[in-house]
Length: 314
Ligand code: SF4
Image 1 (cartoon, rainbow, N blue to C red):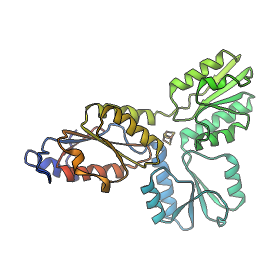
Image 2: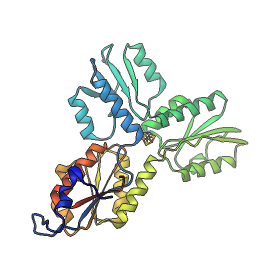
Image 3: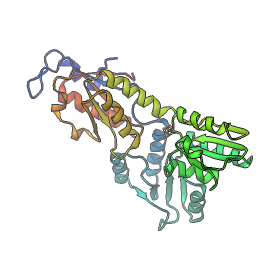
Image 4: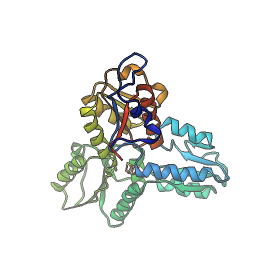
C-alpha cells in the first residue's frame, strides 16, 4: 500500500524529483518488509522499562536490555543504566530482568538484597522455564536444543538443573548417557528442523521422549519477509545494532539475494550513492529494532532520494 501523511513528500515529487547527483529518482519506491523490527517480547520489555523510568528510584538492567546501542543510549539518558551484576546496587532500586530471562537464583538474590525486580522475561521464554520445571518435577532427563552459553539458554539451565544437556547438533548426543525418560525443549530462536533432528535421534535411544515445542516464530517470520523483499529490491537497508545476532543474520540473508545490502544503526550513516539507479529500496530490521527507528530510517531515505513509500505492513 502506498502511504501518504508525513512521508508523502517523496510521492508528491513523483515524476519530477532529481537527487543531488541529477539522477531521476521519481520511480524509486521505499518498501518496508512485511515483518520487521521489534517483536512482541522486546516491545513489551521496552514499555515496562519506560514506565519504570518515569517513576522515582534507580532502574538498572542486568546486561543490555536489547542489542541496540541507540536504544541503550536513550535509556541511559532517562536514567536507566546497565549493570553486569547485583554488586553495589542500593536497596530500594529496581533491577530489570531482560527478555532472555535469568536463572532463578539471581531473582532470589536480588530480593534478598532489598532490590525491586521488574521481570521483563518474554512470556514465550517463560513458557520454556515452566516446561522444564514440569519435566524436572516429573523426573525426566532434560535436553535443551539451544546454543551453549547463550543468555536465554543459561537461564533455562537454571530451571532445568545442572544435569540438563544442551545441544545444537544431534551428533553431540553420541557420547552422552541417555536415560529412559527424556524431556525436550528448545531455545525460542532455534529452528523446527534442528528440534526434529534432535528428537529423532533421542527416539532411537530413549523409551519415552516428551517434547515441548517452545520455538517462537518471530525470528523466522522476519527472515522470510526479508528474503522475499531482498529477492526483488535493488538496495536493502537493514536497521539495527551491529551487536545484534538476529539483525546480522537478516543482513546475511539479504546480502545473499541483494548484493547492495547495507547494515546500519541509524540514518546518519546513509550514503546517497547507495541508491543510484535503484527502483526498489527495501528496509528491514531485527527483533531488537523499535518501529520508531524503522520509520526514521524510512523518512530519511525518502528525504534523500525523493522515493515514494510502500509499506508491506499496512
Ligand atoms: Fe519473545 Fe519471540 Fe521476541 Fe524472543 S523473539 S523476545 S521469544 S517474542
